[in-house]
Image (cartoon, rainbow, N blue to C red; front, top):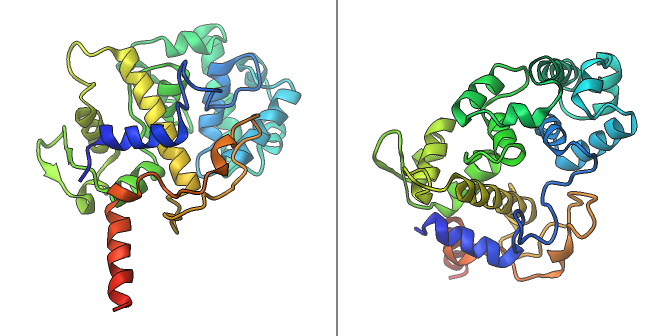
Amino acid sequence: MVPLSELYGRLRAHFGALTGPQAARPWWPIFGNDAPFEMLVGAVLVQQTRWETVEGAILRLLAAGLLSPAAMAEADAVTLATLIRPAAFHTQKAPGLIAIARHIVVGYSGATALLLARPTGELRDELLRLPRIGRETCDVIMLYAGGHAVFVIDAYTRRLFARVAPPLVSAAHGASHGAGTLWRRPYEVLRRAIEAELQLDQPGADPQAAAALYADFHAQINELCVRYCLTQPRCDGPPARRVYSRQPGRESYLGRADGCPLRAVCAHYRTEQARAGAGNE
């Protein structure tokens, strides 16, 4: 079993910095002039939807002049649903986004950054009371749009860590868990366990440093699971050449064909290799 810090180092060596000042380009593509609100909208739209579909919807909203809290708050739900289609649940997400935009307009004079500047605990409670925002979406917004030190648990995180099987100690229960049990546990248990393992949830820790690490680590996990650690993994490569974003230069590392950077420490890969070897005997 390999510590999370080593997994992160291997991913970073493969993909390079994806977020922060060392990144060649922003990992989260921004097309308009209101990045916090665009990220919030994107976080809602990407629920059960591929990012490339969301990106198309973002560009249509921008072209329609609706990618701001003030404009979206006054939008017609049917028109908005048409613009964000084929995002999953577009007819439910449209009125939800309008309600969120109205909340920002009424409570924060249309400035999403003011909302996101609230203390972490208070902000989480407030976001979770808004429509279409669950725990994962809430933490994506807080981390990427607001710079809060929260680690995002998504399907990619569960898939990767269940296969690699890093040793984690649950902050909620104070006990070690194997991959077969921990990665089926509730969202908050996993989030606290990862933050405890990375040791950036301790008193006196720099929240900006923690947020920077969490954002880049989460981005690295997403890239790995889009490229290699698919439902049917491409452990030995080449990476899946999915058009993930129209952002210039986003796919620059796809030319390499050396396989998943975590193969050497992946429990799933070692098990599959052992099975293949036994079958050839």
